[in-house]
Image: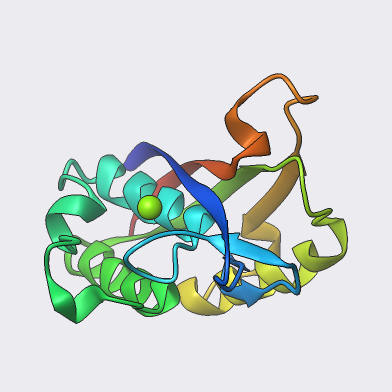
Length: 156
Ligand code: MG
């Protein structure tokens, strides 16, 4: 038994914020604005897991009106979503994440991002793909960073 899920998120870039993507802090003079640490890639990934299980979305699970999630570490929230996935009897088959950013350049951080996610899921690093692309200056990515996640869950 397999389930497919997709997630999408976008956050605005702003000064005075940390830039955290897939649990990796990236040195840059701007970061993403949000109630939590605004890890846009992990948000898309969590929505993909919840989408695969038809369990709603992270806005429902971790409402930004709840002060408990202010500045929240998104990797910790991912841990909660993974626990939910296991309660439903599923494990990650594979995940593919695309981060859309005009800046900064992300290529050198991708191995660490994949490691972080593989550790969270307890899976082989080969099951987790992270890619980065730009929108050639044509889209919204100049003002922020967006992410898509597609994944397959398998019933064990
Ligand atoms: Mg978000």
